Image 1 (cartoon, rainbow, N blue to C red):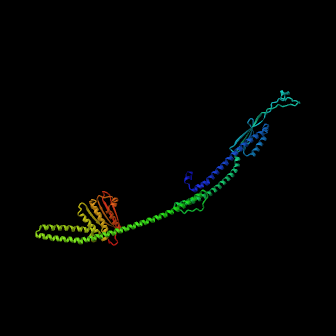
Image 2: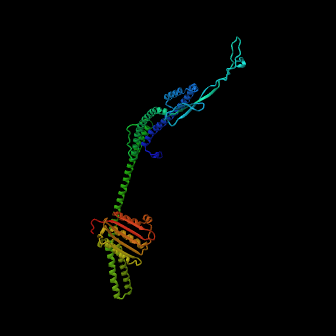
Image 3: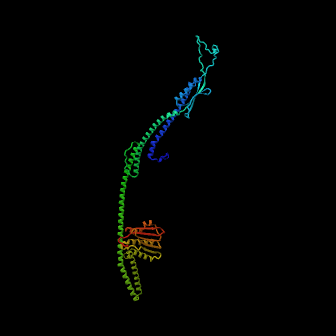
Amino acid sequence: MSARTWPSWGIAARLLAIAVLPASIMFVAVTGALYLGARGEVQRDVAERGRLIATALAQSSQYALVSGNSGYLRTTLRSLQETDPSIVCISITDDTGQLVASDCPLSGPSQYTAYEAPVRIPALPDVDLLDPGEGPEHGQHPPAAGGMAVPPASSPLPALRTVGQVRVLMSAATLLKAKQRTLLASSALVLGAGVISCLVGLRLAGRLRRTLGSVMSALRAMRRGSFDVEFDSVQPGELGELQRTILQMSHTIATSQHELEQQVESRTRELQQAVDHVRQADAEKRRLIVHSNARVEDDRRRIALDLHDHLGAALISVRLEAAALLAKAEAAGDAEAARGAQRIFDTAESLYSSTRSIVKSLRPEAIDTLGLAGALEDMVHNLDKPHTGCSFEFNVDRDWPDLRGEAAMPAFRVVQEALNNAVKHAQATRVSVDLTLDREHDRLRIVVSDDGLGFDPDVMSHTGFGLIGMRERVAAVGGEMSITSKPGSGTRVSLSLRRPRAAGS
């Protein structure tokens, strides 16, 4: 863990660093300061003692050095050596540099400092003891009043001469060793204080960590959507302010969420009611469409029956009467009457054929006699005869159910409309009708495709009433219809109808 990764440290690591690092740095700083202070103090003490010993020894050994009393000097040096363990070596030399006395042990510290002091004594005046002269010219003081000799106002200090040299070697190692015990005791006290500070810091950091941990747990719970947040205790100061802020925020969010949920629930109920109304209206519309289609089919069937029974029978009667008149006119040789009877016969025949076509379009008999597949095949066959420029194909699955009557009428009308659109508007050259059974989904599939002009379904689905009627017919019986087309690429109309339960395969 390095300082570079400080931004990625967790709360525990940061609090531990805050608790331990200051105490550790303080311990190192105080210990270093104590050591440096003790070392400097020892060095100053050694320097002062070295200079003092050298000076004092130089003054005390003047007459012993002049008199040549080396024994006294050696005794003095040994006494000093025994008294002060910081002295490494003491030596006294005369004015010629010759060693007079020394006390240096065979082994000692390798690091030391030398202090030197000269041994000086007053110089003796040059007096001629053999000169008997008296008077001021011979160095005697002139008599004062009363006969007493008076010395001069000021006499010069006697001159000093160097008779030897004192050399003292001092080492701080011994004093440093003595200071080490004091330094160790001080370091121990500082270390103890640092440990106590660390423990206090760790305890405070632990309390702070627990508080921050509870705050983080509360924030995580709020992030998960749980706003029922509580704290075991609210701390004073900024942490307490943070805890109170979180509690207030969680309460505010919980209240807002509850109000929002109520609004959403209310809106959902309203939307569900609207959807139910739409579904109900759609179901009613489909029932109305089914009922309307049924009424239309009933009216068509009734009209077809009326046309077949009344108009068809009347036209047959007219045709028979015209045939009888034609035979009589031809037998009588009346050409004019024969031509009139022939025109009546042809007109009756044409009207009868038109009536048959109208009756078939109003109520295709093939629906009841041949079923849906047969009726569609008959429709395709009838369209293929007059439209020589377009080829028609019809394909049916062998397992296609036999649908007859009203169950087959919606699909028949939708396919009829799709084929009429292909013939009248698409200018197609190829039209196919495919009937398949989707066994996996138990659905009936009818596909009418052509290679005509095509169109845009998004535009025509809103403006083409024929397409709208086709969709409504299919939706009314629970089916689905899709139209795939684009300009220049033909059209594909796909129907998907529920397979009637009563129909057999």
